[in-house]
Image (cartoon, rainbow, N blue to C red; front, side, top):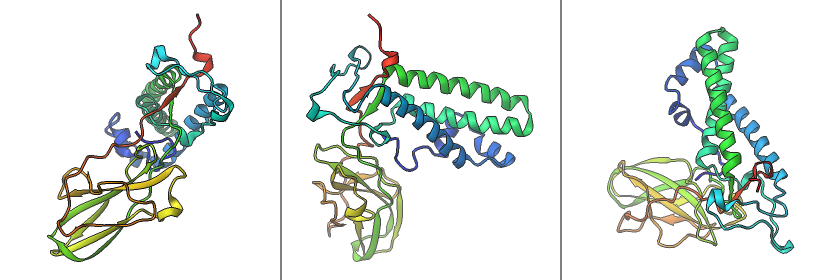
Length: 275
């Protein structure tokens, strides 16, 4: 799963999964979807932070095992206290829907206020209600967090040189890993067209300078001629290391994990069950 602060968290494909004509509506009425997405992320982020503050997560984790199936840990010794911020928040299914519905609500609010079209008003009302329902789910099920977040990296740096690889089209991605063996979200796709007898060298963007504090290494993934990406390195590479394709070519390694799973769920104290 992606983290809340990851770049490119919500794209047009995420939104058009709910509203297929969104691009047309936005283009016709001069609505900037990127701006609306940024506004929605700010608003959702503010409300998530309010819940984290109310939960007192600088001092404890509020976890409701009845709802989440997680181990019940309601407080920790002082040396283990942890302050969770938005960088620690995992985008679970309910949170992803909340963000998408909030974006769509704002898009159709502007469309209605510009055109005074009742169809747009209906969409605005619908997505506002769906946003509220998704927010309620996040409150009740909890905010998923990780202790050692691995932010999504920028595009990997790819250098092409002479080698032994045959011609073809590949896509290159990287992902940070931490000491616990967790892997973050893949970097954006870097498509590369190889001529016959080529080789590539891959580095993470910024190398050590852009590595998250929790990162202890990284993995490189290659997709060859439309195939799904697979890991090319047997063990994590050092944060400042580069990777070069061996003379034997690309391998069919493991598929990406696609981000970190929540380690804890923070329950808003206002939503805790009363006994």
